[in-house]
Image 1 (cartoon, helix red, strand yellow):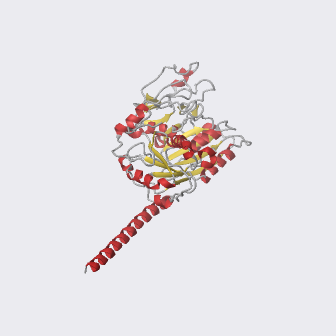
Image 2 (cartoon, helix red, strand yellow):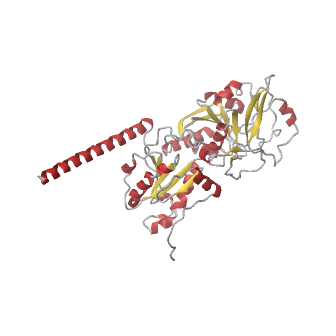
Image 3 (cartoon, one colour):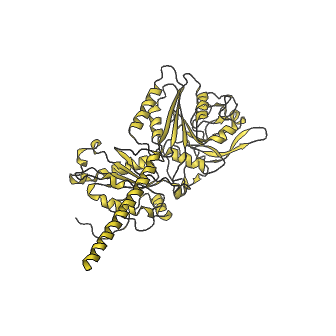
Length: 452
């Protein structure tokens, strides 16, 4: 009798276990199918499985889901085209479309350069769901005036947020696109934001256009700037900075109509229907985006703003900053990193980037198929010195700062390293991330002794 009861219990447990496994497999398959319906899972150096498709975090600027149009206007043999294109391909917001307009001479090779960069970018499979290039198109209008080329590119843009930059812009700061988008979204009244300033658009009764309530720092400095825990600096991301526009407002005002003339590209002032000002009249450091026509006359013979000219920057909220936890694991720490992932919910709106460290023990990638809001990357030891070999003295742990540098470069914002064996025991809320932003470094306390 007892044996019969035990046998029935075993059968029941086996059936229940089989049902649970089937249910889990079904859920994982549905989650994976949802992800694949939007984009094929990447392989190789960069892989992401099951990026969350819900709206979690969509109310915060730290989780941009905005579709961006990038209009790159290239003149004749622009010297910085390699750097500018690379800066676009490393954008941290999006997804985005890239529209390249080539207006140089007949012997200009810029289009071949940009096409090759984009082709290599696609082959590297770095575009992932929620971020990255959605489409690329190029237009060759040889010999066209750059202003006209800008207007043509703007009219081809599909999305509300449009970034306009030229092949002469010097974009030196990772996360420049995030800074611009945060500035534009910080007020519903903003028409555009550059690397130096933002403002409200004001229309007078006589049809004049003026930018008022300018926000951002007016500076004659170079590329350097200091971040502040209290404010987002509309930073000097370039000597000639890209501009991000609200397309609907631009179209309403007709700023990119055929009659529009402008001084240069990038952070230039725009004035609809006014004569173009000669070179050297308007400094490339001028911060304002729009002025009334009378402003042009006042600038003749004038110079850029004083070095100490400044206004209050855009208020900075820690909720609006990209937050990333980064870790790394090898084959013998697969269970540890899964336990870390199980506590990630205690840090809301936080991305996890997990690097695979190749070693003699293989990593079973199928174990991570159902992970959400996580990016799995393989650390490329082949491009590193031999002493980083994980099977020799743990690679001297030299791979750790390399990984942190990559994540800071790719995502910007706040980056927290956690060993794969760590756990999040309590919620990492606003106060925690404010401490990280304020001090620049944070480390938990632990007991024990440090032995010689």
